Length: 135
Image 1: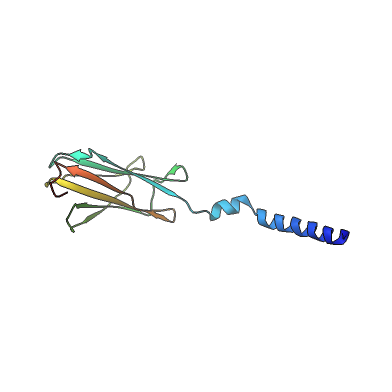
Image 2: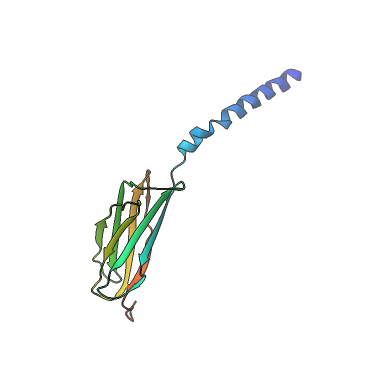
């Protein structure tokens, strides 16, 4: 009986040692999470006035200043004509563009962001002028 208990104890110790692993290796295996915050200023804009779009990208608590790819996809509600604009970071590492819109209505933007082996696609809505009655 003592032999069986001793063998079980040794087996459990070996199993526990094998399962504990190296915490650093485990952390390296975890994917980098992307947090992409898109801001639109103003969210309700006047026709033919500049709208500022920004994407602030954070991975594991640190700003990503050099993403693999950042594109803004913008379109008017009820319209299949989407435009895609490649965006580069400013000196602070924020991805930003300015754009004007000649037609009022509801618009959407998706920031397509690829960085640190991950991809994120946050979507936001904004208005130029006023919404039409069908929107």
